[in-house]
Amino acid sequence: MRRLVPKHFYITFEQDKLLRRHSRELGVSQSAITRRAIDGVIRPAQYLPLDHAAWEEALRFIEGRLAMKVPKTNRRWTRDELHED
Image (cartoon, rainbow, N blue to C red):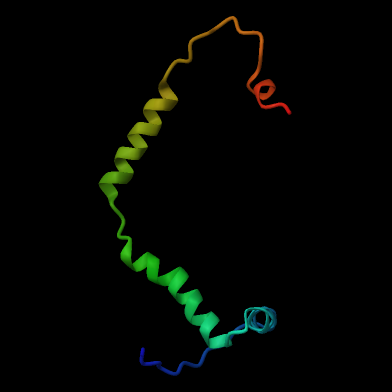
């Protein structure tokens, strides 16, 4: 079992209200919800380092797509018409 470390922190009254309600709805402790929130927000960010080369590559791809010339056609329909019910 994990070792738990006691923490003391402040939240707003609105956050307290939401936390209490969510705790009741899920049937779990407020501490469990707080741990889940930390795991869902902070932990993923720790393990996903920024890959600047990948971002640069994606940016070049997007800029290339934006620079493409779209051929003119004689179609008489619109994209929205294709998706009408």
